[in-house]
Length: 398
Image (cartoon, rainbow, N blue to C red; front, side, top):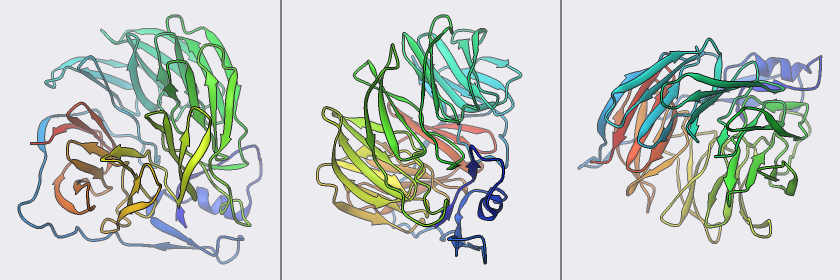
């Protein structure tokens, strides 16, 4: 079993196992032995796989531009999001600075907010929105970075906000979904997701479907469809089922953002399943047993996911059958996989971007960046990379 950092919720005294877990640093190189009780608990450390050999000619990526935004909290496994809107790139540091660049890498503005930013940023509706460790939603003017409004919520916000023209929606770490008016910051509605007594530190981000349904996922393996304007539940569906005798074995958090394509929802859980659901009738099309804390992606008719032990799976999006499995990058602390042109890209904790051929799952190239890679995104033909040491870089396929 791979071991992330764990939150203890709704309890004032922690079981022995939980207390030990909270003292460990999250990494895909840690596994548990004998975690069914608090006795004989010994974390086993796996060395990252060596870099796989690449057959010439090796593929590469072209660096467009880079900058630095300052490092985050070294003990925190959160992966703050970068965002792009109208060609501009937005990012934030853990220490409270928010930045904007144009497409060529020229810095447009920089502001110091005096906030402990834990969610990264989301740009939209003329806003740049982020969440903080104290549960504040903060909206800045996308043109100049000036603060437009701030709203307090129930708990720390660890995932990016959903920003639409009408609402800003966040999922707090205690399971409370909060929606505010995008223009004024006034409270619109809240919705409480039931939380287990023990959960992994982190949450998935809300996503929008059909322009009026907010999809949110909880730590108990369930997903919910809520009306964007009112918060009224439209549907609820269990995605993952817990199994085991201890609280640790029963962790089934959904921390990777749900992914929507062609009216299908793809979502993956920790110690659970990668599932495909029809959003028209909420029926599950297929499930694949796996364990992941990263968002899935899509390409060439496949759904890709990186597992907690460093494997990459390609699953046929129609049948749910495994197309290929790549284990050459095991225990390298992989980021979420993304599709850039013809290739699948994944980052690792050693600062490498691995270039993978989508048809057979072979590593065909790599580039070295600065610091452990925490977040990668593709917008258009650009790859946005955020490293734990604060290095921001923009790449494209040559």
